[in-house]
Length: 173
Image (tube, rainbow, N blue to C red; front, side, top):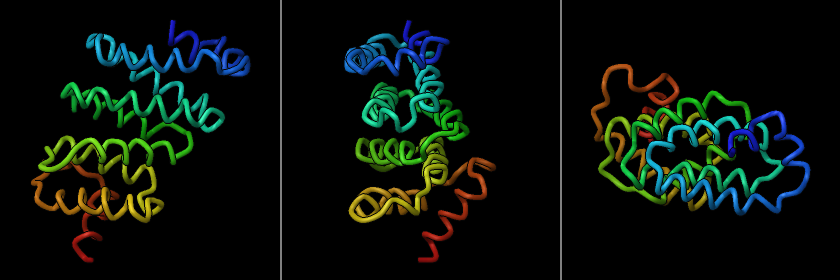
């Protein structure tokens, strides 16, 4: 039902008809993420497909969907989050939503980070435009994460050129 409403042929009409159902949809997504482990991957796919359709026309709802995606981390599913992140980085929508996701995740976790988790987050950071994260968020969340990444021995080819350049710039100062 969620997939049909949010990404199907009726989705444009659904979003244009008003937003009264969105709080209930947000709550339903959250409950599914917490209680229905077999459905988490499907729901992450729905989120990934919905974001380009909604974008910033409904910014609060888009951010709530991103927040719901982080629930898989609470349940220790870093691999599932990594797969979602790879798909997300390839989508066409406002990159501020990726920055929102990055900051949300960084507010939830702390070092030490696994190589898989760190490489996933680095990919999101570069896809979201890390240079646009400024002020307190940069000082209190991004820079400590990047500093912790210096201690990680990443597997070969775990990082792309952009992620390696970001870490190199951190070392350079």
